[in-house]
Image (tube, rainbow, N blue to C red; front, side):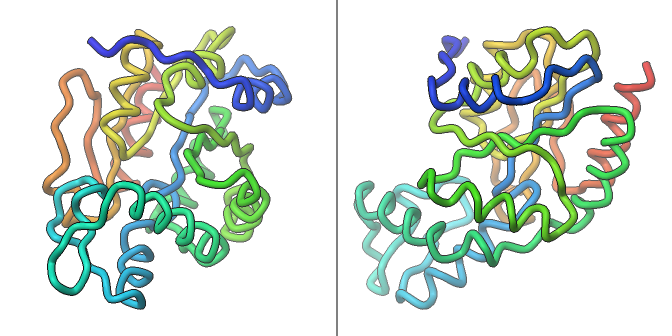
Length: 221
C-alpha cells in the first residue's frame, strides 16, 4: 500500500479558498482527461525532431531524439515545461468531457485538480477550460494527489469521485481516501491500451459516456 502523501501548503491554500460544499464531489484531472495532452505533445515533439519510443504510459525514458536515443530525465522535465508554457492555451477538450461534466454538475460539485508545471500557467489553464465551457474551480498541485483529494473531500457527506490518468495519483488517492470512487481515464486509445490495470479501481475507460453513466449511478444509489 502506498503511504498517504501530505497536501502541499500552496495546494491547501487554494483548497481553503473554495466555498465549503456538502454535495457529492467529482475531482477531475485535466491533462489527458478533460483536455487532450498526448496528441498535442506529439505535435510539439515533431517540431523538435523528437518521438515517443513506444505507447507505454510514461514520459521519462520514452521520448527520444531522431537517432532513437532517450532524453535524460532533466531534459524531459525541461521539455514538459516548455510544452505547457506554449501549449496550455491551445489544448482541446477530450470528446464528451464538456457534456458529461455539465450533466454531472447538476448533482455534484466539480473541481479540477491538475499537476500543471509552472504556477504562472494557472490563469491560462483556467481561461482554456472556461473557453471550452468547463466553468469549474481549478486547483494546481505537484506530485501525488492523495493529500489534496483528502483535503477536498473533508466534510463531504456524499460520494467523492476521483478521475485521473496517472497510476501514481490513483494509488496515492486510494491510500488517502478509503471510500473514494476511483476512475482511471486515458483519452488516447494507444496509451490507454498499455496503461496499468490497478487493483481497486472502480472504472477504467477512455470514454466520457461511460464515466458519466458510472458516476450518475453512484450518485443515485
